[in-house]
Every structure is written in structure tokens, then in C-alpha cells.
Image (cartoon, rainbow over all chains, first blue to last red; front, side, top):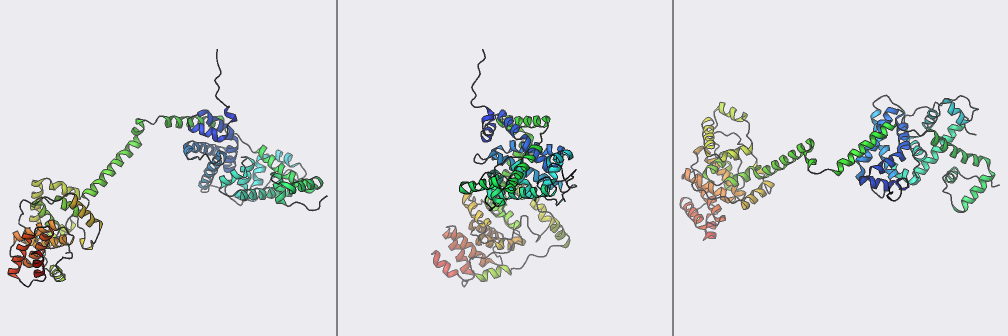
Amino acid sequence: MSEKVNKGPTFEALTDEMLFARFKRGDQEAFDVLLKRYQAPIFSLVLKSTRNRAEAEDLFQEVFFKVVERRDQFRESVSFKAWLYTVSRNTCIDAARKQKRRPATSSIFVDEEKPLEIRLASKNENPLDAAAGLELNTFLNEAVQVLPPEQRETFYLKVTGELTFEEIGEAMNCSVNTAKSRMRYALERLREVFKKRGYLK
Amino acid sequence: MSINHPTTEELFEAHIKQVEGERAREIHKHLEACESCRQALLDFESLEETFKKETLEQPSTALLEAIRRRAGQVMVKKQKPGFFWLLAPSRAVGLVMAVLIVAGLGLFYKYGFEEESLVRLASSDREVEKVVKKDKKIPSQLPIGGAEELESADVAPPPPAPPAAPAVRVLTAKPQPKERVAFKATRPVSFEEQKRKKRDRYPETVARPRGYRDTSRVGTSVTQILALKSEKAAPAKPAASLTRLPRSELDVSFRRALNLESLRRYEKAEKIFNAIWLSDPNYHQKEKLLFHWAFCLEKLGRKKEAIKKLTLLAKSQPNYPGLQDALTRLK
């Protein structure tokens, strides 16, 4: 007769910090749960930074290797999410700096002063439909290029990473109010761009 | 309907749901009535939602698997450091290097300074000779006896100029490591042979000695402090006998002795004074030698011997400056 052993709360119910503490004690399963939780947002962030899937995969791998190797540097008082995004951000910035020597590609962390070239099918279309027709991701990514790097980064951390403003402040080493202001300016600017192109009323 | 539109900042705060209290109610009321403000708020939400939905990408499962594997390996390594941790090639090399560096530093502190090593080795006449040989061309230090003695020491006739060819050879000769000197000192035969050969090859040479250090600048330097420490730690054994010094080296040795005296290394200085006296009782700076020798003896607590030297000095030069004071003090 098999008896189910009570392992306490399931891993999914645990906070990031609890899971990471377990991982530090050698619990591999806890790491798997964390990886599952953050694989999509971190990979998306990294992909936006590199705009190249192969490079993004390398960076994504590097981010999690760093998390594993620097596990002892993590302080319990800090949000794991903020720490993870700090590691990701720094990894992306390093990669972007290296890439500056090579032919430039767009990065959310580097201001390239690239002119906005949003390819539109029709001004009268619904913005989402129009974007879908043109390859939505490309459209949105290019739209975001009008933002200064700090605003762009804040926007991605908030929207894609779903970080709180406190966490964004920690990750970007700025105050909560600065993070909020950057987000507000980013939304205003994007709204203007979308309106100008006829996507928003 | 309120005609006071909320600012974009307030709209944004409403969007992130951070407006509280009375102002929140006012904004809500305004939004119900104001189409443009409501639209602005909807635009914010629409933008965020669009980005959130459409930009999330998933990494490949192979990549995730590789990361999991790596994390697992790291954790396994962490759990099993044990003894074999030290045997990893890079760590083993590092460990050996660390041991060598520590050993090297230890040796440097033990033998690194010429002064200390001489004091430590000063247990036989052979070593006294070595000191004398090493001290060629070292400028004299302040003698205790007075300024005029210093001047006379400084203007002492230099040793005769060496022949041209050997001088060139000496100047181009590479200095040998200090450890090697100490090592050879433990082998009397080879040391003697080497010394004799050198003397034959470079008679009366004025070349810079091995491990030469300009001690004229030494005040309360580390060297001096360490010298005093090493004197305390390892007091030199009294010499059984003193070998006579070659005449050509007497001046250099005398200056060396004065130098040591000024460094308060009286025992060493006394040995050299003694060696000079044995080599040449009619040394041209005999009076000065006797005076300083007596001073060293006094400092070493050998007052009777000091008085003897001063008495000798009084016989040859009764008006030697400071002689009467010294005699009075000793008696």
C-alpha cells in the first residue's frame, strides 16, 4: 500500500524566496519551479535585448548559470524577482556593450537613436489587427524603440516581467518614484506614437 | 460633470491603482462622465495588455534541460567538496604556489637583509672576514666620538686603484643571490677557496660588494630595527680567534666598523676593531681605532678592556678629544 508522504505545501504555493532558499540547501526541484516561473519573462526580456534568438538563448543560459553560481550572494531581505532581473539586466548590458563592437542590433538597454519605422498596412485598421497583419512582435518592438533606454527598460520590466515599482527600483538601482515616472512617460510616449499612427483614438 | 480633468500623472496613478481617498472618488466620478480621460486610461491598459500578451517568448526545452542539468551538477559539487577538492589540478597548483610564496617570504625575512644575516652569521673569524670583504666602498656612518673623527674617516686615503682589466670584469660581474652566500658560508672549504680565488683575481678591488646597500641613509629604518631585533633574538657567539685582515682592506673594514658602531651593533664593530688591531698594530688611524674600540667595549659592559684601550691611546696621544672624559666616566 502506497502512502503519500506529506511534503508540506506544494512548490507552486511557495514564494520565490522560499524556493530559492530550498535550492540553496540542495533542492533541485525548487530550482525547476523557479525556472518554470521565470523562463518566459526572462527569455522575452533577453530576446528583446539581443533581437536574436540564438544569442538570446546563450544569454538566458548565462543568466541562470549566474543565478546558480551566485546563489550565496542573494540576500533574503531582497526580492528574488528583483535580484533575478538585476542579474538579467546586467548580463544583457554586458552583452550589449560587447555587441557594440559588432554591427549594431537593437537592444532595449542601449540607445541607438534609431528612427521609428513602423510599417503599417492601413491607418484605418484596428491597431491590434494591423499589427497582427504585419507581425505584431516586430511592430511592438519597433514602437518601443522611440523610448529612451531607461523608460524602455522600465516598461519591459513592468509589463513583461510584472515587477512592482519597488522591484524595478531595486533592479535598476533607482527610487520607486523614478521608476513610476519612467513608466508614466513611457506609456504617454507610446500612446502618442500609437495615436499618431492611427492605432488609438 | 466635473470640468477639471485629472492630470496625466493622476490618470497614471489611477491606472496603477494608487490613487486613494477623496481624490480617487473624484477621479472615478470624472472618468464616468469624461470620454477623453476614460479613453486615455483605456489606452494605457490596452498598451500594457498588448505588450504583455504578444511579447512573451519561450526558450527551447533543450536549453531549459541544459540549465537544469548544470544547476544539478553545481549542487552536487557543492555537497561533496571533501578532501578531493584539494586534488583538483588547478587548486593543487595554487596550493603549491601559495606554499612556495609563503616559504619565500619567510626566507626573505630571515636572510633578505644583508645586515641581519651578517649579525646572525657572526660567529667565527671566517665570517668576520666575509663582513670585511663585503663592506668595500660602503660610506662611513656617524661615529659616536665626534665630528672630527667622522671627517678623518671620510678623508681616509682610498684603496689603490685596481688594474684596468679586472676592474671592468668586476663591474660587469653579476651579483649572486643572497641565499647562495649564506649557503656557501656553511661550507668552509668551498667558501675559502672561492674567497682566495677572488682575491687573486681582483686584488684590492673597489667593486661594489654583493648585496650592497647604501647604509648611509639608514636612520631608524626597517633594516636597523630588524638588525637590533635579530641581535636580541640570536646573539652572536664570541669568536674563537680572529684572522688577520689584508692591509689593503683595513681602511674599508675600519669604516665598516664605525658604521656598525653608529648602528649600535657594538659586538660586531668590536670584532672588526679587534681584527684590524691584530692585523696592524701600527694602523695609521690607530688612535681613532682605540677610542672607538673602547667605546664599543664600554657599551658591551667590558669596562676593564675599554680602560686598557684608552690607556694605550693616552700613551700615544694624551690630548685625543674626549679621551679624558671617557676615562673619567669609566673609572
